[in-house]
Image (cartoon, rainbow, N blue to C red; front, side, top):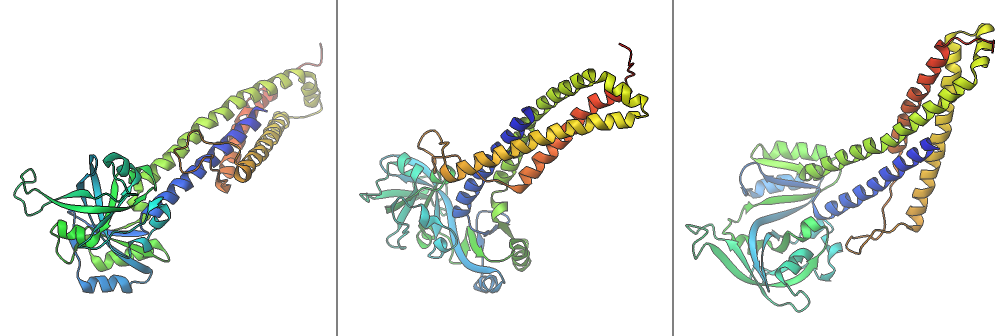
Length: 374
């Protein structure tokens, strides 16, 4: 019973973690491009039309979007610090930002009449009214100023909010989008100067990255979606292994129960063991009997646990009876994703723990000397 409960708990929790992991990765994939080119040093880089054409001709590159990004001050009803991201018309072709606009629309305007698309967190922090379209003021650093703290240290411009995006809290509380030409103008950037180049690719990301890095050289850094969020993916993997280690303790406790049960069985079967030895059975034979029984008990318990976990996960996948508390998350139920690798991992864990739990009493039974006399 303990093995069954432990196995089921391990599979269910790992499946829920997989569901959340897929959800978070999906949200990040909607925001980040398949690949990004940034300067190896500094905040901006220069790229010639010839280089751009070479990138377009690279096998696997489908769409190119240019970005200018900088910290700014947004002054609405309140004042707050934001990261303003100037994007071109191709930007929404390399991600799924248009699917995350609950209010207004994704429109960045023109150089002369710029518009803002603000994150939901920024909308609340700065008191931006997207529905009424009240103008707000955007302050960006003036590179030509002698000191940032001086009166002319910031360039100011009045912009109109056009929409609100809601992807994930990390993005919603940080970013606003505007017109690429407008942001470059405010930052006094040259015509061929950008903060990043984001790409939509087809095919193997590693091959495309290798080709682009070879073309561009060491002055540029080409990053895949994984590399753009390396810390996120690393943390999620560590969390999964920590969860696995903690829940495996349930199986370790179950192993002690099995050791106790098999030890009692050895004591009850003292005369039977003596008869077997009198008939010529050696220590290995006796050990094998109890070892097989222990593995059989663990196998039945593990199989029952796996079936129970599959049933629970199937019900959650189709009917979603277990809900998340509160209404602040993007979904209102626990997501579940069953992965074959988790089942293999749990089976291997159960087998290893069961082997140890059965070996202890079976060895004891094989070494003890029993007499048929009472």
